[in-house]
Length: 285
Ligand code: SAM
Ligand code: GLN
Image (cartoon, rainbow, N blue to C red; front, side, top):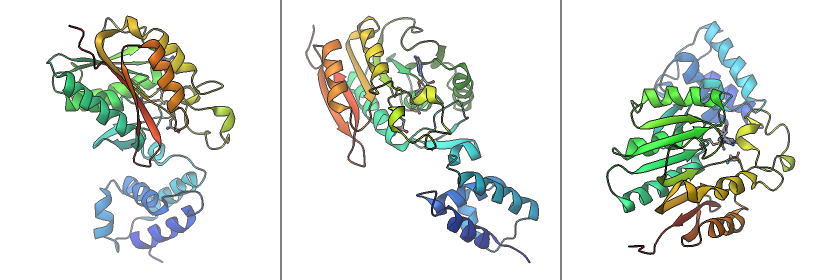
């Protein structure tokens, strides 16, 4: 019996209906990966018959997806802010809600204008935030730090892919410590998850180092903000991704560490609090 693309996608979609909220999309991404095609070609060639080897390789990936392994790890990359990023099991998979952090940081960079703006992305993972910012701000210099050397290797591949070696500097170390001097904008999507409250199997696949925010999810914010004034120009801005429940807490921490700034909480497309921003609106001159 010959199996077409249409048959394979129908079967896999059924199989993934329970474990995934996006079964059809997952099936298409996995099959496109096996065939080495763009996803759009699957729809145009629904009657194409993959080889038995391809069908078997697809079945193996669908079975792994059925155990909640993220699609991005199975195919090795993930789209974020209109760009494509290599990912590995040492990096968090970039999330769509993090695009809000990039959008607000771009707006702030443009407000501060000035060529030669410097930005720091703390806990860069794949480099997604740093690279998206550098890509859209052609004169900005972006420092990107991470405590994970393995994550920085993935980030380096992404930096090279977008030709940004000159303007995205990857630095290994703890939070702000590796920065060579003061910057204009600090952005971070730090680990903020309360792991004790999360089902173990839900977190089985992504690195704990990328997620673990301590007992109340705010350990990394506290450490980061304790030092922030030593690394930020007086007119500088700070933008932090947060969990939906952390708006008031992180806004308070920011007001304490940066008393002259105006602090605001911003919602993502799902209506959840997602970014806290501290900007200097007073003219210091
Ligand atoms: N910025 C990426 C993104 O938004 O997709 C990754 C964010 S992930 C939630 C947090 C990142 O912070 C991980 O890559 C982790 O390795 C890094 N990290 C954890 N603790 C750190 C520390 N003390 N100093 C620097 N980076 C740290
Ligand atoms: N938003 C992601 C999640 O909840 C990452 C959380 C984090 O700790 N930065 O899975």
